[in-house]
Image (spheres, rainbow, N blue to C red):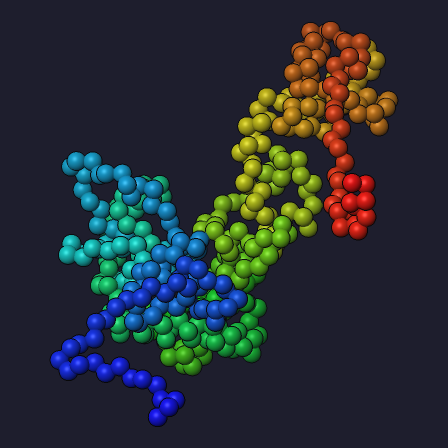
Length: 395
């Protein structure tokens, strides 16, 4: 046959060698070219496969769930007891610590079956070794006697059941929203997380007021045939699960790299001299933007040497009040009460000396003697004219 493909026949008695070929898409992939990945919320760029070494999928270091082990190359001191705890991550930002049996050794990225209530759950090892001890001390976790334990490394049957459970989460979330809407409940179901053994499902929801969802749980348990647990989350956690684009044009920090939330107050905006405009200070969650805390400490340190802006400067020419401050250049602008439109730039050290003289009853002649000349920056040069066809005529 001319077009028949040649078949390579293996000689009898010779078993084919099973070789593992590393999938290059694990480390170099384009999200637009990949199909829908339900395991992206677990921190992996593609679903686990039953025929390959799955720890490579969960060690790609491209998600916010990964933790850099900077104590890995530091030797343990003599006499120190090896910690038998590991950190295991689940969906989104849910992590917990589990005790490892003495005869088991785990590495980051391995899929394990851990103790749950009831049954068992499937998670991914995210941290081992001394980093776990450091984080326990950082979180002020005193006792570790009530820590749940790791049952085993995930078997083939465990991974198959885990994949089937994860793939149902999206469809069940939309179905549960329909059920809640039919009951007239004022709540929004944001996410669904199935337990690894497919016997329990956690429904995350947001609501303004208290919700009586007893009938909802009854209907969902009858339809989905699993144990139902409802957990209420805040607006920040909702935004981190849904994702989106911020006003800066980048993907939301809470949906990419932030793993915990710190309280944000309007004092952070006041210290940075930002306009207290709710439309500009609020993020997509409706709360104050988390990025207000990023430079807060720098502004607090810079403000330590700047005097109070409520005290007026007294001169023989008249009193002057504060207009604005350039914190990092250490320049304060003042204007006379009689001429508020004329701003005078005075260095901070000069302002301090004037205030000290005022306390002693000494009045300088005028503030113009202390002003600093501010160099004007060059105007922005547009590159629109670089495409002009006649730009080379003068050469």
